[in-house]
Image 1 (cartoon, rainbow, N blue to C red):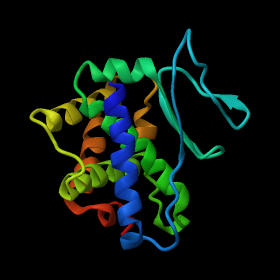
Image 2 (cartoon, rainbow, N blue to C red):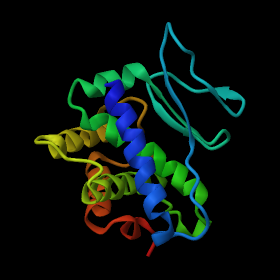
Image 3 (cartoon, rainbow, N blue to C red):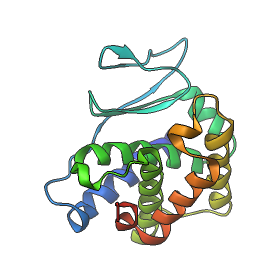
Image 4 (cartoon, rainbow, N blue to C red):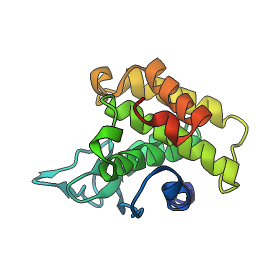
Length: 183
């Protein structure tokens, strides 16, 4: 799992670093990576005045970093390695939103991050820096079902239903980054 997480961070950052100027003005700068934390181990970092919760993954605007609970990643990973790629790409999508002009950010903030995740993962596959394995697409769909409907910390009012999340991910996969921008 650790190797897949490291690869996911590399692939997502490389995609944005390579393609940023095709879509946006200014220079690309990646978020920092706090990485994993876990009960009984490394404590979650603070984001502003509040320490992050366990069993979640985050992009912290205040610190411009990405962090995740190792137990969350491990539980999802048991269902397939695509999980960590999806989580990293989604949280990175929030970091990208922070770097954009407000006119480029959708009101459906979480769904836009799902869209960016689809654009990046499929874009990286087109670039040859990521290879989809048999079952990855089904793993991603199952992850969206779980994240959209079944996880207690995901409120469908915030993140959307499973169908909405998968629809936005597919939009990014099919239309790339420009398909994730307000029309």
